[in-house]
Length: 196
Image 1 (spheres, one colour):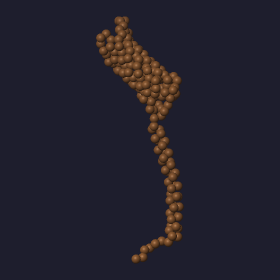
Image 2 (cartoon, rainbow, N blue to C red):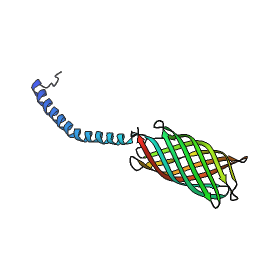
Image 3 (tube, rainbow, N blue to C red):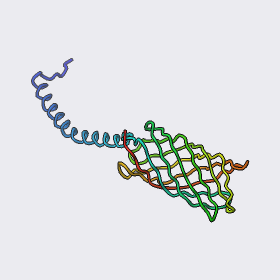
Image 4 (cartoon, rainbow, N blue to C red):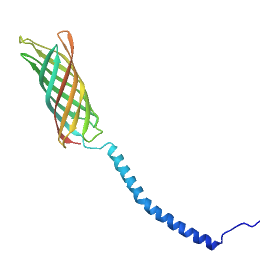
C-alpha cells in the first residue's frame, strides 16, 4: 500500500506562510485585546473602595425637627466628632427644639460609626446617651435621661466640607417617670478639621 507523504521541502514551504498568517492575525488581535483589558481594569479599579484621608475631627451644624407628644418642634443640631480611626469616633451632640413657649434641649455623648468605602458618600450611625431638659409653657423645667439612636448620610463637597443629606434618629427621653420615643429628622453641613 502506497502512503502519500509530503517532502520535507514542501512541508517547510507550507509551514512558513501559515506562521506568517498567525503572526499577522496575532498583531491584529493584540490591540483590541489590550484595549478590552485596559477598559476592564479601569472599570474594576473604579469599583474598588477609594482610599482617602480621614478627618481628625468633624463639626456638624444644621436644622432639626422633632415630633413629640403630638407637637411639632423646629430647632437646631450641633455635634463634634473626634475620629479614633476610619470607622469609629466619639461624638458630643447638642440640640434644641422649640414650639411656642415650650422647648426641649439635649446633650448626649457616645460612639459614632462611619462606613468610608466611597470617596463621596459616607453613611454614619450613632448611639448617644446623656441628659434632656424640657421647659413647659408655664415655665416649669424638668430634666431626665436621653438616648439618641440614629444615623445619616454625608456627601463630600471638597476636602473640608460635606453635606449631611439627612439625619434620622429615635429620641428616647425618660423624664418625670415617663418614657417617650420621638422621631427626629435633620440635615446640615459638616466641616472637617485636620486629616490623618
